[in-house]
Length: 113
Length: 114
Image (cartoon, rainbow over all chains, first blue to last red; front, side):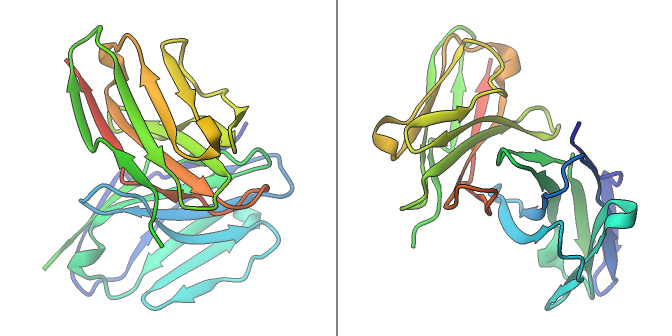
């Protein structure tokens, strides 16, 4: 069975702190895709990143970085020098051969000034 | 380029009534998905269209839910009759490719059944 676990329900940090959001996945597929989405207070789901199972290179985009480790089935997301605008719910998702996404429960991040 | 749009943004109905949600995908995207998030739980897959055909409707909860995508463009999701447990946020997403491709989501429709 496919499953995504985001163990952190809520995280609260002060601006400029670094924060890591954890994501652990389960799948029997050899080819799969991992995603992170951001849901700001306005409600829409904003695509952040997509990684396929063959590419374990870490990725950095500005203050955002992602650490994909197949050995531990994890795809963690780090925000460096957090800002108030980063406050949102972040979802990790797993995609397999049938295109549907399996989402984690989400992590609510609150960044305080 | 316009993103995925959904209408209405909010809907409040009484138990037993009918509600129809609409989704307009990104132009040129053949794949259209419906998901919902109930009571702060995980976002769950409902169904997947490829053009006008239902590719996978394994997530549809019961026969009170009917999804259509006439002409392979916009899609509607009808709930008839609505029950209290149908309350939640209904998201629509679309993607371009035939294999797992990035799904772009709409803003969602918040449905409240009283």
